[in-house]
Image (tube, rainbow, N blue to C red; front, side):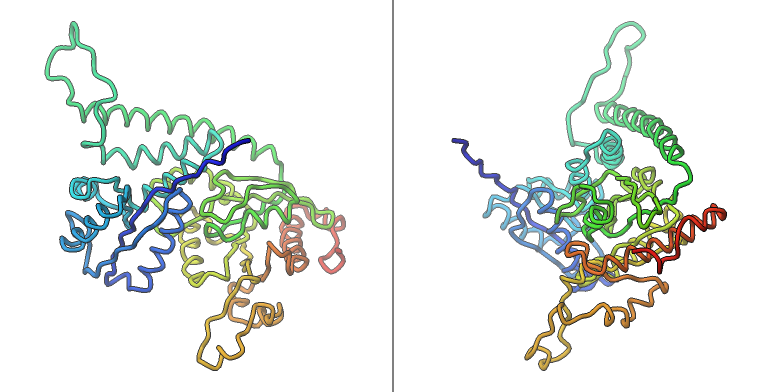
Length: 403
């Protein structure tokens, strides 16, 4: 009989700030997301600490009194990790470590750790390792002992390098090596994309955990890994899809997130070539999330960063089955309206339907309204295909004629 092992979760404390640019409501939402990130990484959040400040303390991020409060809780509850919601400077990280004497992470480090866990292919692992090295380089002081020592001998006598300089040189060499490896893989992937011919390319984009992989599985009848965790998939998956008799390619890309580490944006720009080279974007949005509008803005910002914001886009509002309206007054509480009371026609009358004049409302999980989704995608893909190959217009019927 096989014994089941109890997986012990790492005890974690979260720390965030309420500032002029980040009110209490927004700070709570960021900490909610940070807690979900922590859970995804394998941690259990015991407590959250927040402090109102004009700006972060240059030495310790939070004030002395709040730091003592965190220190007491950490000691009393045997907490092993403290995670800060914003990126810490190398000096802040060192100072906080000396005070709390536990593992100190910031949001960037946590996301990098999740990416390292989730990376499956050699390409994804290389990209994550590059991001980790670039994050690590300015934080080397006091983090480890030397990785290797220079050998002495003829011509090698003299002051030599200090331990920290040696470490920095090794990490810089590693970064150069990883960049060269990524460049080589990029060339191979560019050849693969070129071999796909002139088929229309559709890319699924959106915030992390909005249901892109679930939608990919439904429309392509494939088994792409999908899970209710942040960054469930990192590697871009490309599948051939046929609607009516029209074939095209659909790619599922890495999810975006607010406060996405700069190192990851840079490292994963090559992965996002699938988005840059796509003919049509399906921007998937979790409509059940209380702050989906900010998610849309975050995705649009990253699309702008990689030069893809102006591509033809269909807004796909997913998870209509999980949508819970906020009550406006006490009378709404008497007879609460469930999601079953919302018809597709009602969704189409909302202001959301007018976003870019191209919006759809679906539930990928429950396969609700997918017929309309398929027809809309078919129409857009057909228009692109006919523009590219005008003589093929008779091969593919109008959208009204497909089943």
